[in-house]
Amino acid sequence: MLDQIKIVLVNTTNSGNIGAAARAMKNMGITQLVLVDPIAVIDGDAIVRASGASEILDSCIIVSSLDEAVADCGLVIGTSARGRHIPWPLCSPRECGAKARQAVANNNSVALVFGRESRGLTNEELHKCNAHVHIPTNPDFSSLNIAAAVQVMCYEMRMSALESESAEAGESAEAGEGCANKWGVEWDYELAPHGDLERFFDHLKDSLVDIGFLDPNTPKQLMTRLRRMFQRTGLDTMEVSMMRGILAAVQRKAKVANDIDKNGKNEG
Amino acid sequence: MLDQIKIVLVNTTNSGNIGAAARAMKNMGITQLVLVDPIAVIDGDAIVRASGASEILDSCIIVSSLDEAVADCGLVIGTSARGRHIPWPLCSPRECGAKARQAVANNNSVALVFGRESRGLTNEELHKCNAHVHIPTNPDFSSLNIAAAVQVMCYEMRMSALESESAEAGESAEAGEGCANKWGVEWDYELAPHGDLERFFDHLKDSLVDIGFLDPNTPKQLMTRLRRMFQRTGLDTMEVSMMRGILAAVQRKAKVANDIDKNGKNEG
Image 1 (cartoon, rainbow over the protein chains, first blue to last red):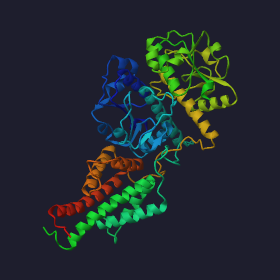
Image 2 (cartoon, chains in turn green, cyan; image 1 turned 135 degrees about the vertical axis):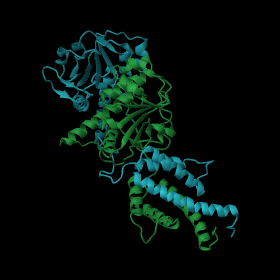
Image 3 (tube, chains in turn brown, red; image 1 turned 90 degrees about the horizontal axis):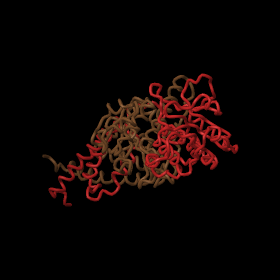
Image 4 (cartoon, each protein chain N blue to C red; image 1 turned 30 degrees about the vertical axis):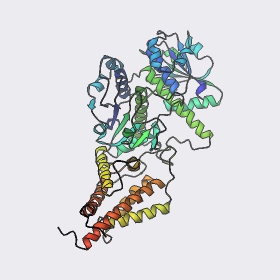
């Protein structure tokens, strides 16, 4: 599992922190380091702090954007302080270990993304992530050193990998498989009730017929797959309204286009 | 619970490590630091690395022996590499958190003891401990920086304290409340890699502009909300293809309708 996990540091300003992060990674058996547009260079201080893990520095990859860093990853987890404007699915480091294990078991690569020493990741960067992880810190002193954050996350990755090994050896490896409120933060809207969801699916189906993507006579698995996709998400009421607004706009365009079609006005 | 736990550093040689340990402690809500016969003094480097946790350095206690440091503690746990001559009760950091919680619940103070940067604790010192803790490291690179070890242990103390609080609040304190692969079954397609998702979001955005739902000049939070919705789902490769097929069909209709609009053919 650990060889499918990469550590991504964005705009790191202190070279010692890069070295200390490399050491923390190697201690926990993680070797892929990606630096996104680093401010610091890998200098003597980085090598001293890496203390025997300098081959991780030697083999680290430097890229210019977060997109590039995580392009091949099925699961991208960004470290975040609490209190973003719009809540995003949030997990603890331990849950993150379970999530990563599952992703790797399904043949995905995983990226753990750490932001700037001064101000973390931007909202735009955080919005590129599948989930956020918050290391539970003292609310009065919450700013972790970046290498310390890397240490905690890599430790949880290793613990999860070891649990997975024990599980394969036939022992119990129960660890955070459940999801209750899977978001772990107070959400801004309630989940849409079932009836609203069903009306949304009806609306979706009609719209797909209108745009000629769904043939009601041979529907195949299309609606099933769409249902599965939206239902496992847990749509909130705001999201259902938004999606229905989009469908209404789609239908207006489709109606114009289809009327034209019917009247034969768009020949040539 | 955390106010009953002290961190004891024996013969520390690097002042920066003392500072970094203090920061790690404060981040996790632990404030009592005891230095046993330190080689390093608390200097500027210690204060820089403490980065806002210097009151822990100010109030730390310096003693001349380990016995003195842990005299009032009901539970003394020493950090240890594997393979001591005489086996000793050994726990993982996580088990250590549970042990500490139990001890504090029974009105005991707890000490976590960390040895020298170069060679850890002596056998004699380890034998003064109730239990040993081994942080599971890469066997090929097992020497953790002392502040990193303090970070991991204090993190587990905090996690245990938070679990204890949730338990007291009558909530489920099961480790994994969150996310794992929430699907719990073997999936039929792999997760879409990050790059494919980004292309999907670009396509989605263009389509929303085409149907007149998104004004690129006043986008508001629309794309952020859509990103959040799709990213927390974890789209698989098949779903991304399906969604892009739908978007392409939407765009075809929109193009017909918009062309008509432009040419003024749909008046009435």
